[in-house]
Every structure is written in structure tokens, then in C-alpha cells.
Length: 376
Image (cartoon, rainbow, N blue to C red; front, side, top):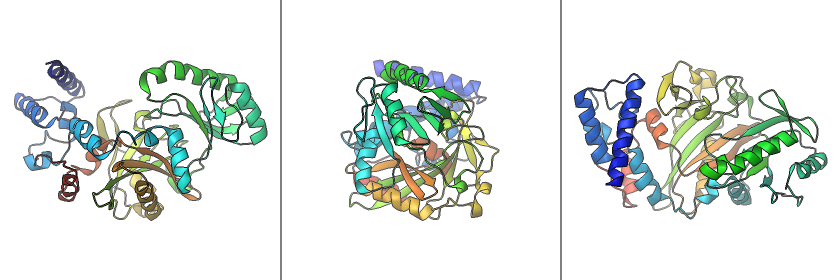
């Protein structure tokens, strides 16, 4: 009964949110929402963003989508062993694991946790004084400092210039003292991370200089490609979704939660779709089509180095036991693709908004081998 009450409250809240977002539901639509919610787990938000309110959409088309409830409770737990997921969720684990296979990954210099951090060259990283000594010796010219376990771009600091061992120039145009940087990290570790993140601490890594072909809006963000892989029961690896993420002009990241754009990629040839999407409002969750035509900013309307991107994603998947559905975030540097992150929760909701229902006949056949059956 407790679960039912929670579900009813969530349904009512999203129904109110849809109304405030300009979506006025008729009595028949509300009944339809309730049926889809009770039988298949779809929320009012999904009802609208998947276009279920359109009169011409058939029942079969609706059931080609997986509800977020089914994704969380059925799809991910079946395909991904929770004991292996930490190598994706923890950025330090990710670097240590995938670097062993000589994949092109971001250079990680160290890990910071108050009083217990370290650099990989053996120097301690317990406070800002340790960091200042390392900066003096290392002579690095730029850095990225990011939470080891956060999602959505929270807490990331990109320093384009190391002015001195005490001052760093951020990509927001301001200079920060090392004391200010460590004060921010300490506060974030002790407050937000304690409540929100599975892992606490920060990693210190090198800054990627992206290939000019990816800096399409002349912004400051590192624009990335998300490629999802699905591994069949006989270990064939299918690249089943691609998404281009672009930070808007002036944005510091390409993340949707920071105002970024997303565009579907045709996985067969790397061609970019005509339509560009982003959050309605500042942080979503409502997603809508935008006026920007990202495809026109790329030569031939295709993602650069696409074949290399696909190969890298497949190789990473091949050494990830019991992680059968992963969204790989890949950047394009001057030297080619770089494996940035892997995501077990790679946001299939956005994928289905961009590319339609996930449950094609081919995918249903693969999923059935794992005992995953969905209504049709």
C-alpha cells in the first residue's frame, strides 16, 4: 500500500507539472495515462515526451518503448551485475581498470580526499600545500578536477591555465586560489556528496584539447559522443544507440542539465539527425526540440572519426564482464577518440525521445535470451 501511495503521488505531481508546461490532458487522456501507468509503468512525463498523446500512434508503437520503471527494475538489473557496476560509476576505478588495456583514456594524476589523498607518482595529496608542491614539480599547464562519483556535471572545475602553484585560471574566465579550490572540494565532499553520491572525493586529471571539428558552437565545453553497446548471450556486441552532446555557446559543459543539446546519431554511418533537442527550462525533465541545427555544423553532416568511435566502444565492452548494456562517453581529441566514462544508467529515456522505441524486433530477440520479455 505504501508503494501504491507513492506511485499515485508521483503520478499526480507529474500530471500537475505537465499542465504547468502547457500540456492540457482531457479526461480520456488521463484514463489512458492511468492504464499505461498501471499496466506498463509509464509516467505522465513519458506519455507526453514519447508522443503518446498523438491520436495516430498505435498500441504497438507505444509498447515499443520501455518505461523508465521497467528500465530501472527489470532491464538494467538483468543485464548488468551490480558487483561490476562500480568500475563505471567510480571515475578512479574506471581509469585504473581501462588504462590497463591501453585504451586511450584521460590522464589521471591523483585522487583527493581530505587528509588521505595521493598522486600516482607517490606524492601525498592531503591538502592544498601538497597540491602546490606537486604543481611546482609537475609543470602541468592545465587541469580538470571532478567528483569521483557525481552525475550530471556537478562539481566539475576546468582550469585552462595554471598561473602559478597558488593560482589557477578557470574556463569561466576567473582566477581561483588553490585555497579556494580546496575549500570548495572540502565543502562539496562534506555536504552534497555525502547526500547524493555513492563515492566521495575528487580526481585530478589532464585537460583534453578537443579536435576543432567538435568545437562547433565555439564554446568552452568538451563535446562528447555517447555510444551504447548491447552484448548478446553469445557475446556479439551491438552498437545500438548513438547520441551527440554539444554545449551551447558560453556553456562550460555539454551536459543537458547545464543547458546542453543532444542529437541522435545513425549508428550505421555516423550521420547526424536533423532535429536538435534540449531541456525545456533550465534543468528538465521536460525535453523539447530546439531551433539550433547542429547537423549543419559538421562536414557532410557526420560525426568525425565515427568508425574509430565505434571500435573503441566495442573494445571497451569486450573487456567489461557482466556489463551487457553500457553507454560509453567518448571525446574526440587532436589525436583521435578518447574513452571518458562508461554509464550503466545511460539514459534510455533520452535515447527513446531521439530515436523512437527501443524495443525493435532485433533487440527483443537479444533480450529474450536473458529472460527479458516485454508486452507487444
